[in-house]
Image (cartoon, rainbow over all chains, first blue to last red; front, top):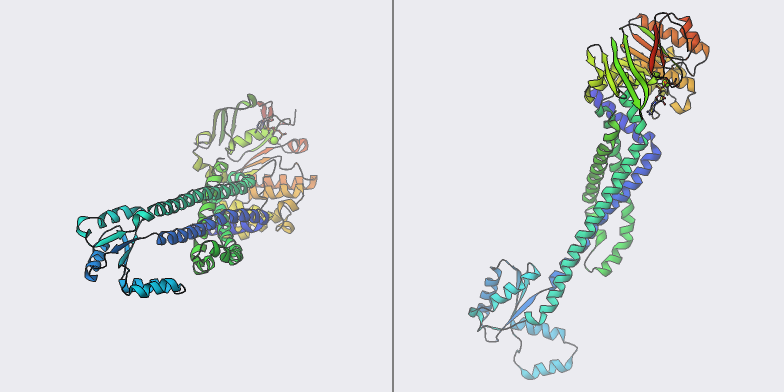
Length: 302
Length: 225
Ligand SMILES: Nc1ncnc2c1ncn2[C@@H]1O[C@H](COP(=O)(O)OP(=O)(O)OP(=O)(O)O)[C@@H](O)[C@H]1O
Ligand SMILES: [Mg+2]
């Protein structure tokens, strides 16, 4: 039993080594398939950070009448936080609002002068609300429009921004859907490419398979070495793919960062190098071993 | 005991074997003769279940080869050593490994393999070529590797399809003498050949096939076409 297993493993390594050309060709195509898998992972990282950025920009502010007590505002804040749709609420007091306003217009002497002349703080306290999902805002807004807050709230800036929010929400979900479709297509291509490569590799060795069977080998004794060689293809291809990707990402990362602010592909790639490689390693081995099992089946029927 | 019972094999409705009835006892030495295309190789192919007959049954001892489930075929084939007409060597393996493969398949241990393989290679005069791949060997050398592979695991039955087709007279007689010696030790030998001299020199049973039919079956027969 153990001898048989050892023989299978040795034969697998020998197959891999002696079919140098075939192994090289198979590994190259496997690399192509794995590149798609890796591209897919990186794409999803990019879109997630893009979508995250966009979603973070979507918010609603609610302004309070100037005579509202701070305690009352904070109570509203707590009520909001109790809603399951609400992700975060940031309180901006009147003083803070004024300070921000001044900072923003510090170059604009006219505005500053006007402010001096009024002498009182004309700005209102506000709560800046972010929802867990952009489509949840109507719920939050209708909550704020309830009878209990009617006297406190001067304005909810939802209706002016409704269109923009809807558009952003649309873009976000379009990116997500597009990403999912692209992933599905890429994954399918990777699967087909890997499977066909393995099939061709095994097809070229079909005579060897039937000879082994005719000499009295069991199916497993014939299949084993192919599975070992297949696993080696997957392993080598996964390492090679990672090494080939590195310089590309090194060069392209700043380019991506320009288009998708806040993304650092290179940092992501280097920090998650082992995890990414492991994903490819498993994908490569599963693809080639499963492909081998399926492709070899019909040649064993002798 | 090998029994062919009314065995026919059709390829595209053309009979390669036609209602063949045969009995070969354990330990016999049998020649199968016939013109090219008569059906000799087909007969041998059916015996190792490389192909299924269109009609009829084949038995080896008490087992029906033609009704064997797929998973039992390896055991059947290990009982039979086959020298294929087209050699069927594994191109990815050296001469040594090709011969050793038959023993690995049969589950022999390392020591047995290390002892027996060089010995059998020497017997067929290939000890110098052990590390060569089939593509680096001449036709006759390949044929001798095929012979070594068929003998090395000491099967009950040896099937040899034109095993001397590519050999010079000297080598030919070496191989025939080897087969006869193995036969004396109790192994059944079934030898398909065109070689008139061998058949006429060795007084053994000759089964003549013509157009798929057994036309003659005589002990101590002659080569007659
Ligand atoms: N796989 C096949 N498909 C179709 N026809 C076949 C096949 N194998 C053999 N035949 C036919 O069956 C007949 C018998 O072939 P077989 O190989 O048994 O002849 P043979 O007696 O061994 O001839 P030779 O002495 O030339 O080796 C031939 O007419 C051959 O064309
Ligand atoms: Mg023939």
